[in-house]
Image (cartoon, rainbow, N blue to C red; front, side, top):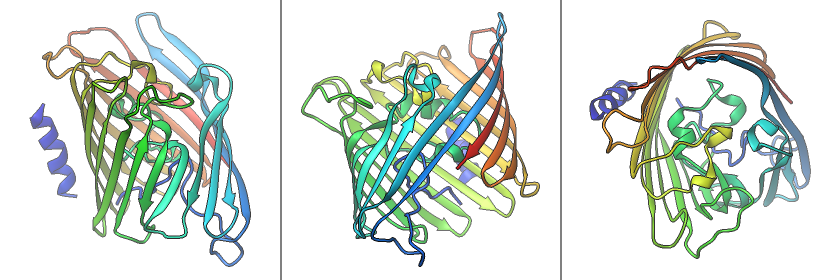
Length: 347
């Protein structure tokens, strides 16, 4: 296991990064006035839909049409110091039912190095989780991000700083640790933080940390993550490793509607992903990942996945994604590969 980690990151560190620090599912660009600077009062309606067709090559084959996400939101400013952000998720395939409030927070952003957000937003953990959902390179996030950075959204207070031009950026949050729309059941809170640094013109590195009490005041949870990305001409290489131990909230589920797995006391996973922009429209992608849901049980529960895909950009607002997922579970000889196709319209 450690050999795999060393191999992944020796490749990466011999190597830019999606520098968005969006608390929600949209990029964090401020709503600007005609002059390009934040206006005293403004608003923007935004959203995107991701209709999808999935084929699962299981022993009893399955295929289905669904919506990965269907989101509508508004963001804006009430004056030069305060902004707001609200997003509604309308896809029943993620929430499992009716539409619900996904993100809703107010931000005091007069000081770019000490912005404060209060409300419901993403945990500031990991490279893939903090990437806007409409900007993901593959249709699904990595298994480790969906299983270990859970709940991916929560209620809390966040302090963050940095601009798109600054080399260093940070965010640290005090959160309930229970997930969306749920009151905390104890007096202790989760502390989650992330920092990135533009090490070279083409290389960005990041580190994340979480410590909390997901179920009660006695059993804690500790999570670490490191990540890196390079962008050299048309070639991009990105990778991430996450380690997690202790208690976890089984009711929190997996990220973006994924089925939560039963985890051992210690668990880990990583991925490495490469893309090449053939031109402004065509982008092939290859992703390798592994996830070990219980590191104390050798081999059983260990998963590997290879994703081969193609992204086609009709324009800046319209994208088609095609992903073939080859899944391997140790000591589990079942056919469970998948072919995913998704269209995205962003407005």
